[in-house]
Length: 142
Image (tube, rainbow, N blue to C red; front, top):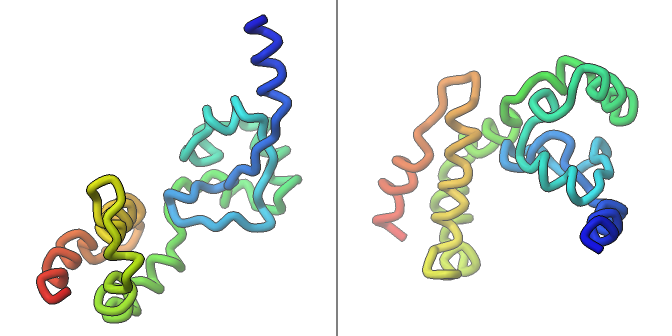
């Protein structure tokens, strides 16, 4: 019975961010389908951590991403550049809209977003702002 349930679950396909959302990569044309178990196992791992070399070559063929792109576990530098280039908008406008001020499970949504952004900012190859420190400095004016 357990085996049947597992097989049934494994047939359910999930759309996977080939490169992790937590590193600011979009769900775009490079997305792939994984069974539920595999998608859960992959989680926020980069392709180079989750797949072996043979599977990475297959993934490259399917997605059009180069082996170098799949091997890079870093964040989407373009998104981080955008946030840094538009800090006043991000901190003073976007994080102050009502949705970002909502409290969900006793946590402010905008604050949770900033905490989530800390990982890709810290993993960047470039010197970046300390997004949490900047948020804390600016939130006094919210």
